[in-house]
Structures are given as structure tokens and as C-alpha cells.
Image (cartoon, rainbow, N blue to C red):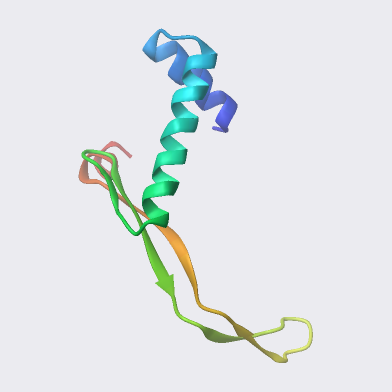
Amino acid sequence: MNKGQLVEAISRDAAITKTQAQAALDAFVKNVQRSLKSGDKVTIVGFGTFSASTRAARVGRNPQTGQPINIPAKRVAKFSAGKALKAAI
């Protein structure tokens, strides 16, 4: 399912227009990003938890030449599925 299909499904299930569904989805994504950027977790009971963590710097290998390359540390987003979501799948 892509974003357009998700917007259409939200619109149909919530009995709202596609424009309203698009705005709601965009607001959800924007607020999750903002929370993760500030270091907070976003927990939706029954669905899961979005969090951010720091991946340590490490040494990798260039697959073509085999030369070592330094991969810098960075923050990454993580999602942990909730119990109800795991059961539904």
C-alpha cells in the first residue's frame, strides 16, 4: 500500500474527503517526526512505538574495492510493533 492508497482507505473508512484524509496523514507524520527529532517516543496503544536511537560509528567495506570506509554515527528512526498489531498479523 502506498501513500495514495492509504489516504483513499482512510477517507473511505472515516467517511471524510480525500483532502481531509491527506491533511490528517500529513499532520500525523509531521508530528511523529517532530517528536522523534526532539528525542521523545510516540506510543500508540495497540499499534506500536516510534522511537529514535543513535547508531554508533563503524568501519565498513567498499563492496567493489574491499577498501575500509568510515561510516559516521547517526540518529535513526525505529518502530516497535505493539501486541495487538503483532496478533493481527
